[in-house]
Each structure stands twice: as structure tokens, then as C-alpha cells.
Image (cartoon, rainbow, N blue to C red; front, side):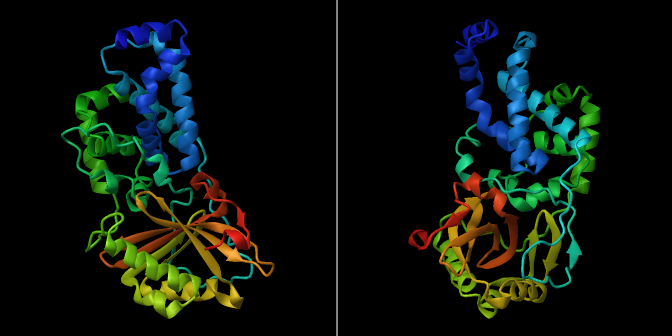
Length: 334
């Protein structure tokens, strides 16, 4: 069946090409996202991959599987993006009416965007290779994707292909046109350079009573602009980041100061639940004097046990990817 589909696709049969590639589309999109950290950049890389595969199918020699061949194309498209494109620059503070407190630090990864959980269906259907070191849920988390972005491009690619997906070193060498020894060396350096926040307690299971409880408490506190209630939900080392703004706040007191400024001058929000990167998330809508709620962005929570370890705030431009409107009327609230 595979050989027949390849023959038909090579002859220009679009349906045959889709039958060959569609089973891998979602996992390739997630792969591009891990490498690039940006949902939009991943979408572009995926489209480039499919176009290159359509045009280059005549050169597919069958020595590797279609899946491995597609990963080769996608990985090299992402590497080209990482090496040649100027990543999104940091933005100046632009939240009207809010004067930010002094940040704890300025973040490096300002191009980060969230990945909607609704698009993860089918992405993890293919079993990982036996050498994979990360759980699939961890490998799509914002913390992990952020940590990947500070690695050099070749090291990033090798770590994702080897430790996240479990491809054998020989296949990775073939994808990257290099040697097994070079792959092993890059992997060693990538593992040493991967900067990740230590987490004492794992997050509660998705949809569990524990997750639902902490999320409900957060919603009540945030919608009421109750900073004291928010602070009780935070770990000591809680953090807030907000790409493409570089401002980051770490520590319970710093986060409290940031939230107090955000709620200043009577700013109040409604939160609409969604999920991103396997984590609880919310579309945030600022209540206007005319009753309209204006979308200000998407918040993604990082949980640790029964506490909130972090919140990443993204701009309103990401709302459509989650099927959320830019504004809501009073009849849509609740």
C-alpha cells in the first residue's frame, strides 16, 4: 500500500500525497514548535515542509521511512529559520495605564508563543523511541520549550530528535548530514547546556480534582483583583513572564507587586478557560465601562503540587489560535 501511494503521489496524485503525510502532520507541527518556540513560526515551517516534500518526493529513495524523511525536511527547515531569521525583538512596555514595577530580570526568549492543547490531538499517537528521556507532557510544557530556545540550533535539534523523540543516533546523523560521533558530541553539550527551572513537586494530573481546585481559586482571586488571595496560591519562587515584553518577576513578593500594579486604577478581568502546552490557561478580558470585555491576552499557569509556580502572559494576538474572540459582550460572559 505504501509503495502504491508513493508511486501515485510521485505521479502528481494529491490525495495519495495527503494519505502519506497526513498521519504525521500534527506531530511534525509540534516538532517545529519545540524547535522554534513560536506557534506562528511552527505553522510556517510545517507548510514549508509539506511543500518541500511534495516537490521532492521523486528524490525519496525509501531507505528511511516516510516519517523519518519528513522529520529530516522539517528539522532542516527549522534550522534554517533559527540560523537566518531575526527572531522577534523585545517590545517596550505597552500596557495602557499600568506602570510596571522594576523587573527581577529581562527575559531572553521574547518570541515564545503558546501551543493550543486542542491541536495536540494525534501529535503523540506514534510511540517514542526507546531512548527518549522525557515524558510527552513535559516535552511540550512552556518551561521545557523555553529552555530549548537558549541552545545553539544544532544542539537543540539533536536533543529534540534524540531525547524527546527517541530517534537512534544513526537516523539523526542521516537527518542532519553528519556523523554519529558528531551527534553524540552535540547531545552531550546540549544536555549540559539545558537550563531548566527545578521543580520540587510535579503538577497535578490534568483534569484532576487537585488541578481543578487550584485553578478555581486562581480564577476567583484574579477576577476579584484580590492580590492577597493570589499570594497565598504562589510558591516561594513563583514567577511571571510576558513575551514579547522582556519583563520577568521572580519570587512571591515580586509577583505580588506586579499584580498590584496590573489591577491598579480599577482594572478588572474576566477569565475564559482553555489549555495550552498541556497546562491550564485562560483568555483574559478587560471589563470596559460599556460592558464590553476586550481581550488582553492569554495566561498560562505552571503548577507545582497544590500551588502556582508561574504564569506566562501572552498578547491578545494569540487569542484566535485558541478559538477565542478579540472581544466579548456582556451576554457572552460567565
